Image (cartoon, rainbow, N blue to C red; front, top):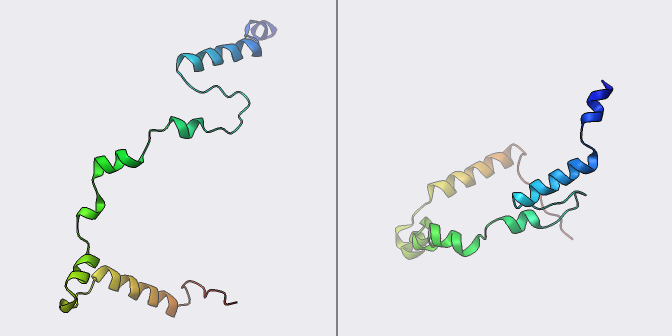
Length: 103
């Protein structure tokens, strides 16, 4: 058993190999494990690239837009109506959001 332990590389040698591996694969070497922004900086930028791919979200009119454009039709949004019913139902069963503190 002792011959197996002698044949294993030392901690320093393993550390050197690990560091070399990080350099080869262009990874950030952080042996102490301190927090750093490398993970965030490695990510691709989002903002303009996402907008360019998905397009402008305001290009498609929503239900609110139609309701604002045609008030004489008195349109009712079924999703909003269901949400309001759900909130009222939860309040009836005392499962709603708590009241805000008044000063």
